[in-house]
Length: 196
Image (cartoon, rainbow, N blue to C red):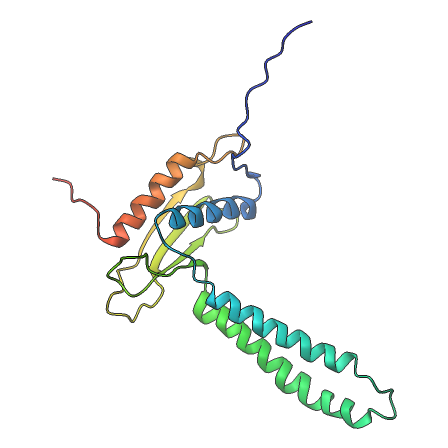
């Protein structure tokens, strides 16, 4: 009997389908979140909670309109009210508010953070990323969560090819990616040492 030694595979490796840009972006975005958390930034989930609350209200309005207890002749006035008010006012207005929050505030953001403990700044980070379809250029942007704050830093970004961070099998080479993201975080924090 032959002893076939199989290559050892690290179960913590992050593997992406290299033909699917959504898979690649998801792996990179997840890694960015881990890197930022390891630097002492806690995730700010307030915006997500607002979106969840608005979505719950929208669903509740739709359920009330759908499952009102009385049968048709008795609930005629209620149905007229639902037809006039809910779709045209509350439901549509709440959906518009939800979409405006996503479009105006979140944009391409993958993570909002609080400032790190012991920091002199009063604003956290807004981290966004882009990976256009049919392209291999991943853009990572770090900006202040409150750009109008006096302690807001200058927005920094890099655009690099994802081929630099993945093996031919689709495994993320985390060391290289962590190095690039950490240097961008250092640049945002103003810790970049000028070369002589």
